[in-house]
Amino acid sequence: MESRLTIKQFLRAFDSVCSSGEKFEHKYHLNGLDAWHDFDGYTCWLGYEDVTVTLMFHGSLKIEYDNQANYSEFLKRCLVLTASKPVQ
Image (cartoon, rainbow, N blue to C red):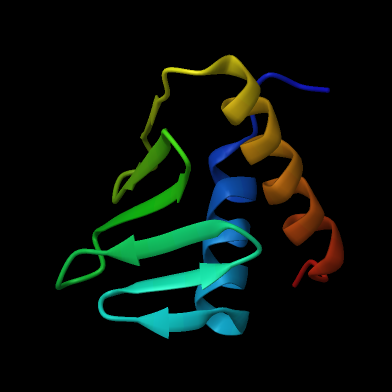
């Protein structure tokens, strides 16, 4: 498995969680993943356990995690979401 996804794949996973997930307070939840954004949508986050991916407006991203196993599971879950969503 790849150790990292592209920003486009992370954005597709973010969109899947927001469009198909359940909203609770300011976050969307789907299959153990959380997705949320700031008030204007310029910064978005995807999270799972101790993993947080920050997606920023100009195409940059920041990946933070403490546990490699959680990061690997996070990537698997994101790949499942991006594989099931058709490319447009």
